Image (tube, rainbow, N blue to C red; front, side, top):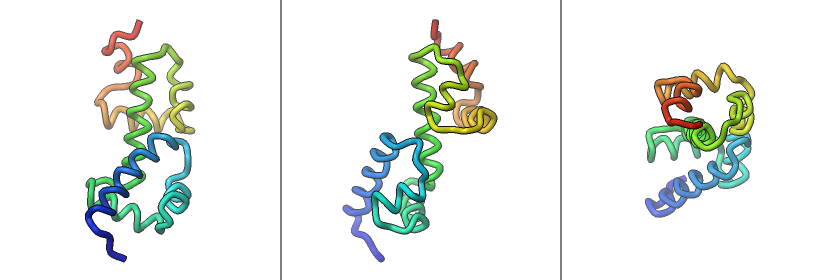
Length: 114
């Protein structure tokens, strides 16, 4: 199946917007439901257009949402982890540190949340 450039761009924009609204859902179920594409096909399309898989983009969205929560609210970090859809605090810390090069606690401290 071949897509035109316009369709490809609309798919990327829609997937980004959709992932913002449905962070806690399962990516394979999400892609089948929202695009009627096989999850592997959608992931390959996104990888070609963005250099990242749908799973990677979704993880990035979750971590960015967590960063916004950390800056805005004084929720305990395990609650933030739950809010963005991670089940493992350890895994969340690992991903957060990969992206921001600091722990969530350090991030909150450096962004002057009082």
